[in-house]
Length: 308
Image (cartoon, rainbow, N blue to C red; front, side, top):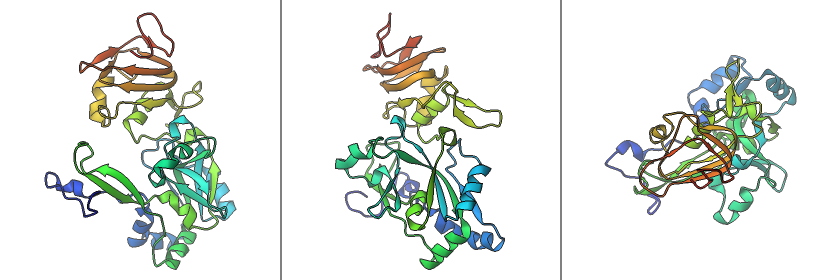
């Protein structure tokens, strides 16, 4: 609990008293289950790991070849940050020049503007990681079976669907942070086709739109005429969960091919064939659902404007 630092208690739903350890637990799981030893004993040298929600993460033999020739213990795929990535973790260097992964939860409030400055911190972690398993095993053996990863403190509520439930701290580690724990690790800049995450309803909204396509080999990537992904900012009080979003897009997600940024505040429903262009803010201050139809642009038009 955030106030007492005691283990969280929530009798209404005891299962919510537990939290996931973060994907940094990958290394402990590999070692603790004996899987790492077994893979190394079988002669397996390289492993590719990615977030299951990254629909752009596929096995790329060119990257594997580059990684194998590098001799590095780990390679992190990074991409150039855009407006939609500014709140995510980015790659940086310490004073000695060692690569580090810095997550938003590790950033002091007073440093948020600099943290989100994409001209200063230009690359973000896609969490597509390539691991040299013998090197990983050697590093963990040297550290009594663990990797020294920094602990991340995330502020949450014990019930993610109830913002009035008690505030808690969720403690976790990030697997990408191993870039600092494995000396000699490298990063490689990849294009956006390697990164198509679905972590939030904002991501889902964009990925279900025509701003993305599915290729013949079943990869999800930006449409040819969409240079950067549209920034989506849906009302978090209304559309944080998928089941809450579905009524708003029951007629389909609007076209976002020409959309730079869309912000939605208040209850809405998108009509079939709706098109969003430019930078648009849709505001509905009433409790009644407002139907958004036609073409909505960032310039005032007949019957519609950016502040619908």
